[in-house]
Image (cartoon, rainbow, N blue to C red; front, side, top):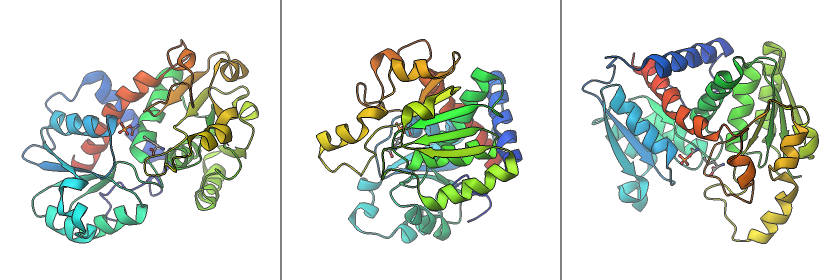
Length: 306
Ligand code: CP
Ligand code: NVA
């Protein structure tokens, strides 16, 4: 990985993450004020899966820093007709100054990044969603004034969003519980990596199959869709029964701390992983969380191109 790539949170130290969040907070409060590190530069936004927040917030973030975003849908490129990711990365590097990429396997992203001569940023893979976790940590910091020592209860499928939350949380001193249905646990490789961070950064990580135990006394309850992009088997009723106990509802919120905030990366499937009452209720931080995608990514781009 090139040092200016941002393919996952794995290479970042806790102190680097803290600096990035501090800069995001500053840029959110003060604005970018004539900061134009992307002046004269074009950044490609290459999406092989749908996106509302990530695509639009990156497009605006590039504009705010003086650059020109070039939105590319995988299906409309020759990539959609079988051109390799390596050849795509090589060629696009000749025109662009950076690439923000949403794709399937992390290996596909890494192959593209290895062939590209410009910084590549992960806009979600099946393995992780690091830009989401930056915005999530910024939101917790904003609402709570601190991250260290808090309890974050993730409830749902133990995949990409959970993986990045685990990495960010255990590097920033959070106590993270991940409650999933049996068989939906996060990848063992990420779990053991994060267990190492817990010893370095004085944090903790607990995997559970009981969401009410996970949510007890939590400062933050976090959920994600039950079926991720590209993973729909078409058997909705099997998914609904597998995840039935994992819906974030008022009962679960009542089991948490009195000042709990509820987070969701969105898009939400209202009535499935979260009820209307909770997402629209007084504990919901989801709209500020969605806004923070923009501020976190402005800070990330400013760091890479500054
Ligand atoms: N949270 C998130 O990544 O949303 P989009 O899929 O809309 O980009
Ligand atoms: N886990 C979800 C996250 C969407 C932002 C997915 O991959 O579809």
